[in-house]
Length: 112
Length: 109
Image 1 (cartoon, helix red, strand yellow):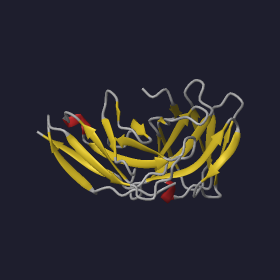
Image 2: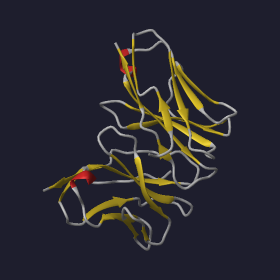
Image 3: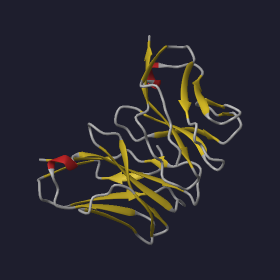
């Protein structure tokens, strides 16, 4: 158990809908990272937050947004969902300028 | 962050050492070498990291060449449960982890 909690574990929704994925980092970790893993692609970095502020951005679609709250949990919002958004979404966390980043078990999103 | 090059796949006999190579010829002085693995769609698992010196923990050893342009992850006694995709990543502390394609390690009985 990495200590990073992601909910829900599985999500099935229809095209055009909006969903929110939640991540609770390890206690004391200030950085949160979001990744997407599709079947035909590797782990793609989406976005990083550090203590509530956006720190780095990857190839995150405009339909996707994220935020980190004062209690340090983070949410990834996916809107106008398309079939191609079906993927595993992982969250990771680390301490300030931390050596290791620890990953949650992911949310498997299926868009039908 | 510097790029890394890893073999696409490797096989290893159960109980033998698995040696996974990684090239990172453009690594900068403040970049660390990290290894993660992913077992069948689970969340990536941190294994080990190092800067210049060789490192060992309960999971593995990391050997970094003196010029830091390549490294080897060693799993001393591979088991079937070590079958996974292994990712070598070069990263500055606190920055994002950039995953490549990794090496598929198949441990066979």
